[in-house]
Length: 205
Image (cartoon, rainbow, N blue to C red; front, side):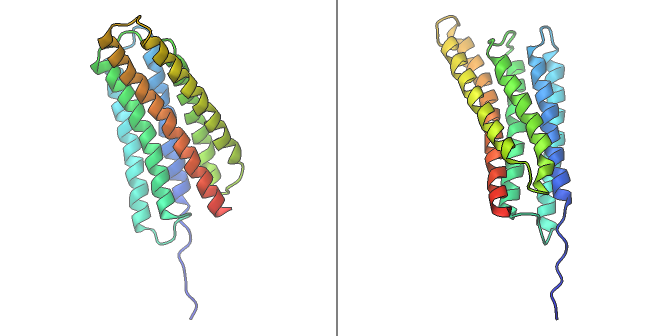
């Protein structure tokens, strides 16, 4: 008697794309930190709501993995990918929340470049997630994310150099460093996502 297998659940590709689109929305909110006179309390509230929506998608992916017999690729890779995308959102939300909690009025100039990198990474990730279904045209994605991560690292080092230059009070340095650290962690998390996509591509191609 021939074995009958359930078809692969293609909804995962839609869910990964949705999860990445949450990052685009989150990155747009992070960019509002650069606007003079922006309502930080309102921004933090909207960011928490965006993070909650992203969490719902993450949980939906996990539930689907646990209830699906045949997944599109290894379960451990699905968990790793959804966890990586979730980490990006968490770090972005953390940065916005710290700005509000620390009552920071002005961010170092280099933060604008960090946020620009985050926005570009989010856009590229959202555009690339549908490609997981065909496993085509993904190489440019992880190469460009790696390049952007290197750009983010350079911005981060320049910001730290300025923070420790003596121009800022010690308490202000501590506050600002926490914020730029969160943004740097978000960029690093994007690179981890790209690395996971590359690993999946290698296994499935």
